Length: 301
Image (cartoon, rainbow, N blue to C red):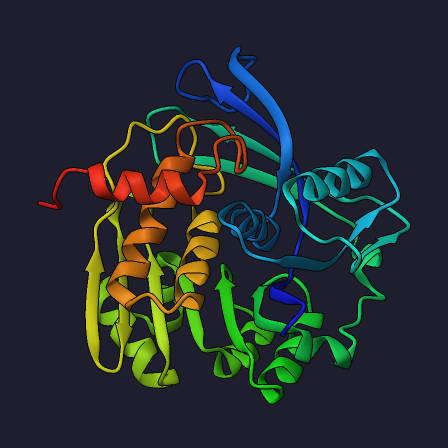
């Protein structure tokens, strides 16, 4: 029996989130309608989602030797994420300033970290056989080593690809599940139509490809079959972390061998429930909440 269901390799952030009271205008002083701080980061929040749903998870990453690093570690532990692989480096942790616009799918993020904090990260070879799956993002170069080792050990690999860079393009052929943003899909394929872009990526990499587009839903292609999954209608308080929750919930569902259309709807439901509160983690749903929401949600038009 493996030690973990999922090991994640990616950024762990501390998010400072403000909610606009009015449409934002740069260069002016403006009041906020609300403010909250909590942990964030694509892989880290996906792992918190997995833990909330009942999976055994660990994060391999690094934080700085500052108060934000301490806060990141404490919160991950509180949510049930194993942090024995979370290193501490000298310098600033990854922090993000998020401006959320209630009722909208739009948010603005500024972030900062110091590269030296992550410079000594390594993926011990023995870890590859201790997990059923690996979840990676496009931030840390060590993800490439991890992906090669987990692939050799026969584990499942999912990538959350946000930005196009040489490391990500090297990672994509190693992955079983390629889950990317609409902007990423368009940038890589040169296609504006997301259905066509999804199919093109699936044909190129011959694996499951999912393209997410927020409130517009998601497109998936596997084995030549194209599946569109609409987003559940919501009146979002904040969409921060919705994509990360989608990734975590999708991987959870795939690991329990749900059919792909069911897994996509499960992930969409989890992401919709997340929009009830500020930040990526304040309203993460339980497994029972997601399944109840899916049963009671109105039929898809």
